[in-house]
Length: 407
Image (cartoon, rainbow, N blue to C red; front, side):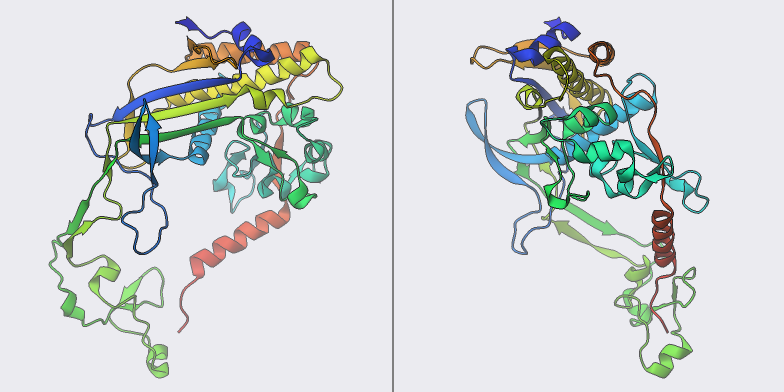
């Protein structure tokens, strides 16, 4: 297999491929047959379990599959992989951010980038921040972002190209629900095949051997939140005849006492034959993007740069490992590879990709776009939270730290 190059990616984007596809086979870190734990979801009371399970076709047969990582979760992981590359200085592309560090009481938030905000550059965090002393949406860059459309995506490409990879809907901007929509070009998910739903057990032995009957449901909320609980309810509560019992008043409410052994059938993990990560970067979606006022060569260059970000996402996410959650660490069975999928049904062309190659492709793609007159914004776009946003966060924190039942 040959290694993916900038020239091959550019040709694919120009029209000789419909998509880039990456399929990675994974096994639990404990080995084949070890139990893994999928994400849980809210379900009906009488549901057998809390996992997303369905029948899927795989290699010519129907398999009971379980979702191990959703499309949305995979997008977030890919963005964090790009963020890691950007913060290390290896990957160079525009990353707008809001810096909370200068605000004394909320400085612990640090810097929030467009790769971490739930709605990307259309998020309310950016809407309620200042760029050069002006609310972002009222700045020149903000107005350009508001007016961006798939038929003229130049502003979004210049200021936040990752939004063209992972999609963005400007539903909270000045145009409300009519705000611009950019579809996901990058879609990925991880499923486990031949899933067998399991059970897990739980228990706790209290070394203090505190019996649940010892307090006769007489554990109360302490008026001092730092003390948490007390065996004596407050005088004010006694006068009102409403003792402020903590939960049901048993030792378990304050994390003491034994917990009887139990069996959990709702979320007891699964065993699988293998897991498969399937990632598709739609070049067809990228070709629908237009960049008004630029030549066809410039448009191809811009789309290639966006595709290069998608390729970097695949390579960098692979090296960040597949530790999806507690007890769900997966190990790939092979290095990352990409298939260039044509529109004529012919066998896909398979190429390899790694961190080094992805970085070189992105560097060349961004330089080529700049040479064609449609380069990325080179100055870092750093905003600060507007005073009203700072005050909102402060009030919310104050409420969280003081909220307690009154006497």
